Length: 318
Image 1 (spheres, rainbow, N blue to C red):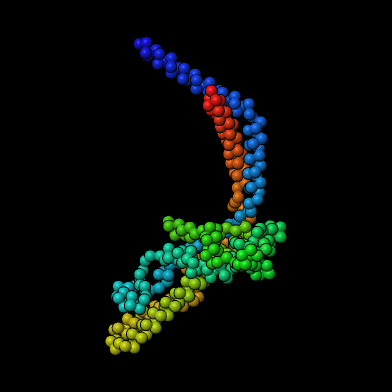
Image 2: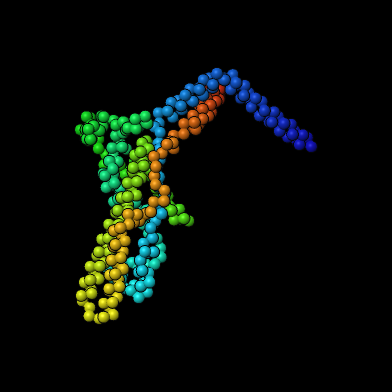
């Protein structure tokens, strides 16, 4: 019984000690309130300055619907009878499935992006443009890096400031995004830039370029298939086989004609890209709030650390 009473007193004593410690901590922080306030204001000012130094980033996007080439041909109806022969000619008779995943990978591939960088002068915008003047609508280029349409040389190393294709790719992939909604099968292509007009031009150009590239590939494949089928047609004397070859050639010819006249070969534009009027980043208010909170916590931490450091120094001296 005596031990139980003693333990109860010890527990009460510990709670009282904890309460006193919290009160002492609050008094300590209150005593150094001006330091904490000034430090927090300074940190908030630095956060504000940093947020103002960041350029406005605008985003432009296009909503695309993948074209289903299988719906435009009659090859699906011939698939059960011609599958083996058509596969030899490199003809796909599958009546189902979408190539959207493949087309997206082509869109993100270096084989597609490197020529795109060259045609749309992406390297200049990503590496030489310092800022965008919203009032004049012009890009301000760093004249020490790029001047009169030419990349200058680094005076210290003697090397050109012109970035490699891989350097451009690494920086471009950070501002380029492709999202595929597997439920609706729609594709959203977006690009961020300090120049809203530039972002819109890049997105429009990318959609046009991927459609042109895939259309040319399709025409090349169809042409090779027709040439192969014509060669096999000349070698056979079987009337039934000739009818089969004529049927496949007819369908391949239809596919070529459709590919030639259809501009939106791989992706049909549902919503065209526009020039953004509002920035997507930076969120300056959020940056300032976070800077103020971090500064306040850091100031309190410094006050508490200094207090305990002084106390430990006193204990060591004793």
